[in-house]
Image 1: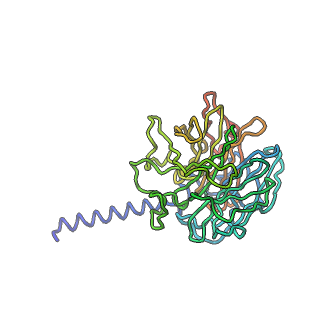
Image 2: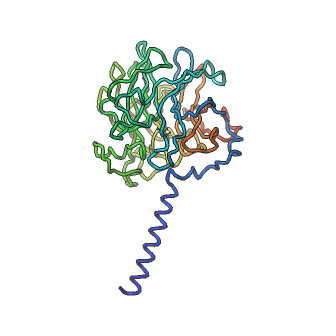
Length: 374
Ligand code: FUB
């Protein structure tokens, strides 16, 4: 080998190992680089943890019977090291909470559903949602099946706080994580779902589950980003009425957001609410730690990107719900104040959300007290 070739190869090898190291630094193993995780960082929190008797995350809030019910994940420390697959999120049951007023007493309703109650499930009971129809309450949950594939299940109860009885099989054609059910004014319900990386959405990009598929992004930065799915629910609320479709998010020029647009593209944590006749699709950007939103004219979209709802919280994940209660709008979200920054030990919080006159959502900074109730 000529000397010049040897020098060139060494330089290329060195550059490629630096690039690998940089990529590793952006992984889920590293705390969010945009925020400090020491306990002093929480001094300016705009709100306090809603419950402190146990960890809670991924809050889905709904108004049932004149109260706010909160359906969160129940974080606990299983001693599993953090990785990009989310194995450290090893949750095994759901506790439900309710309150008569925001800022008032929070009632702890106890366990509503456990992994051991679900015949097809193996582990990792992640972010749930709930819905009401014709006198019954429904709980929707992602969990890994016995083969380790995330599917979405449905469970039913006569009461909003449960206990919930799960269907013996997952919802047909469901996959991935983070179900969120929106019911329109005409009574039709839709489920939004999906999440990349540990949520496995990228492993379904061919239409079938590929166990050897990419572990994180698809690395197709110039192609339309993978995105959430939406499906109409059956009248019985336990199955889809159709095969899921893509939730397209457009940029200001009407083009689908690209895979490389990490500050705006969908990662996980779908939510839909309606405000003044428009449909607001909101979601987490995952590795850039933002809660963003896009607006559309119908439940299927397309939705046009609008901006940031919540700046990064302390902790890697961010997840939310938006609900109107007694004439005000609220953002339920989580951070890691109780565990002082541990990614997998989160706590639910709530703050008021405000709209500008043109229907935009005012961006919330979670650690600027003066921003509260903007
Ligand atoms: O709680 C586990 C996962 O973390 C959720 O499914 C995601 O949305 C993220 O919050």
